[in-house]
Image (tube, rainbow, N blue to C red):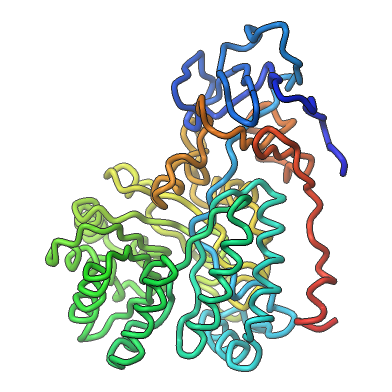
Length: 437
């Protein structure tokens, strides 16, 4: 094991002194701020954060690791991933990079290869990478057409138990809402989701039955105590705006569970008055929105021989200004929907800043991969630095935003319960047995 830029004390009690911390991630501490960054001493005792003090004021008797103004973040929350699809690119590529090409490639690969052993191998590989990067909470969508729903949810349940002390895992059933017409399938899917503590998901599509489909989904969720997380309007077609229908359905049915909508790309294609009215409905309905900037920029507005004209992301600034809970996440990893990625929230954050213009100022930007997704996922104990909470921290040599966002931060140090973890990333060769050399 190697400690890249520093080695914290191997002691039950120690101080991370002269640390720079994103203020939005710290509970119960204030100090002079520079673009949302504050200086502090973080006292760790017996795996917990014992105190957060002004820089340079920690008790002298504690062992010290001088951060020299380097950043300390909480561990990350990645609220929209696809662990079941990950790392199939070499086995089933998407040569034209299109959305339809991705759908076809994944369907073919799923039908041919997604045994329990295959899904488990790739899922475990992804989690090892995410853990090494400093993630402690992940929500994954699982392709849930029969018979895959039973295969993948069973694997997920076993993996969730095995990883419970490292990464908290949640799962969402992903399927086209059209398939709810098959009552036997839908009833069985609800049973699987309920028994595994999952969420109902789905892909909304513009069609004459969208309102009745949403009503049926919401009634099923309400009757079984389930929350909802949907794939919404992942298109550049401005005629498609099912986000409005979802908000209306939540309000119409008086649904009190949590509803999350991912992507929502076409919202950015609307006239200002339509976008504003939709955002107001989303806020009123209490829906949370997650943007997937890397995957959406990769897929959206892709046409052969033509340079893309827009970024593919939703109206994150406008949604946040309206009081809508918002976050960003990894989405797909090395599969036909996105050929790249490593479930690294630092990369997601860095690219989100560029793509969504989260900068100038960056004062609250850190929330989109920490406090905001953790709260949306019902885990406000994660993604925060708080006295009494676990010392689950990510340490960086970068002192300022420009330094943090200009390099991949591959020399970071990850602490879990105050102890340094091995940050060795899994070797892609380990996947040769399922993907092929």
